[in-house]
Image (cartoon, rainbow, N blue to C red):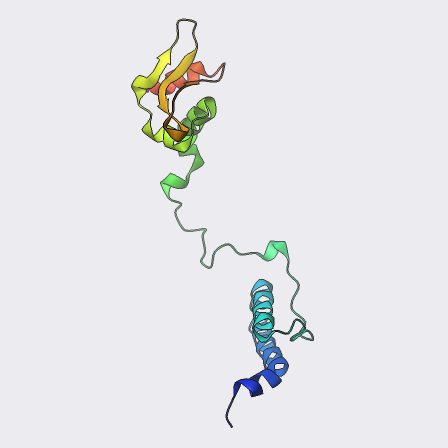
Length: 148
């Protein structure tokens, strides 16, 4: 028996239904089943293809973010928010853009005679040089971070 494209198209509903029933029995996730049915409907050009197949209900609590167990895996150090608190405080107090923070040097941080702290000669958007004021009340945080 030769499977020609026209023969497959004629039996698409039957074949796709059997395929989906098999995957439901194998315990595939509801999201996978729904995505598969949608893709097959698009492929065959039939929005009601395999509509008689009852897919399991999707529940938010059943979402698995990883296929492997993460309880025993050590989290990389660079992913810990506690290790980045100083940088986050600095960026929050200055409002620097990412590329500005990368190119900033300690010598660019200046205390003004009136007590305000500014970041001088910051190369900003469009190559413009600007002075970035530190938020009021955050001057001591910035100076503490600079002094180490």
